[in-house]
Length: 299
Image (cartoon, rainbow, N blue to C red; front, side, top):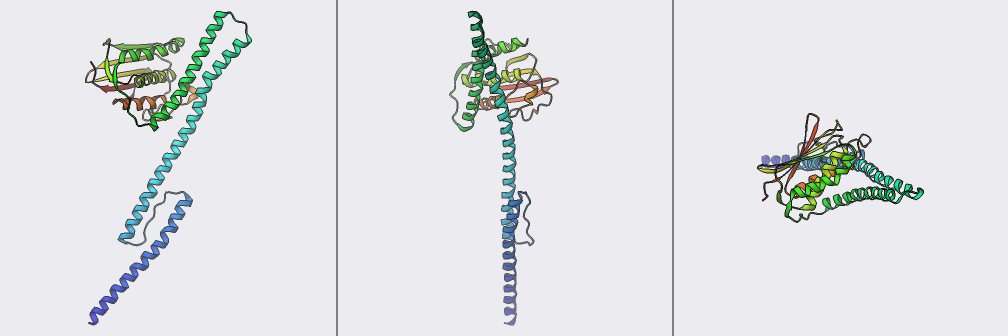
């Protein structure tokens, strides 16, 4: 009988000790959490005792701290990218607008012949269309990241869409004594796709090559197990981060290039993936090569 009483007393002592330690730790943990929250550190909480249930609680708290710290780092990274994007947006919008306003001022203050005025008006129109295109890109990307609807698919003549994009940049390249060299063995490639999405992909890739290079642009279409379109140009910016090239708002130094919001390649990537394709970039010697690839589904 005495043995049982002693045994029960020992159990009670153990339980009381456990409860005491548990209560002591539960009083300490909120203080530690408060210190971490106000110091904005990612310090982890540790238990002074080995208590199973308490260890599980601390594990969950530490995981929450890690996740919060990760989200904060991502937020800061996005915030920095956004600030840089705003600088680039301002630069991009101001350039064609300032140019157009300059030509308008010239027309108002000069007595030019009718033919010269028409020529200047066409230049103004081109600058304003470029401005409109940039604004549309910002709204377009906003729609992409907020709209989960799939693009409507139909039969599309790939050659025709690509040629339209090339023609759209022909004048810009010609002014700098540069060329867009197009190579495709097939006269007509019909694929199941979306014409507007394809046009935007090609426009953005050709525009990117124009902004970030001083060389010709080689565009090559090949068909094997899949349909591949490669865009190849000499690199102007040597410090380009090939692993981040398709990130939203990733840009190189605008003071050494023709500027850019960093949205062009991000939009091209998003549209390519929505069409069931994939896009990649690589550097070979002095060349940047961007490859767009779609499944082998054409007539």
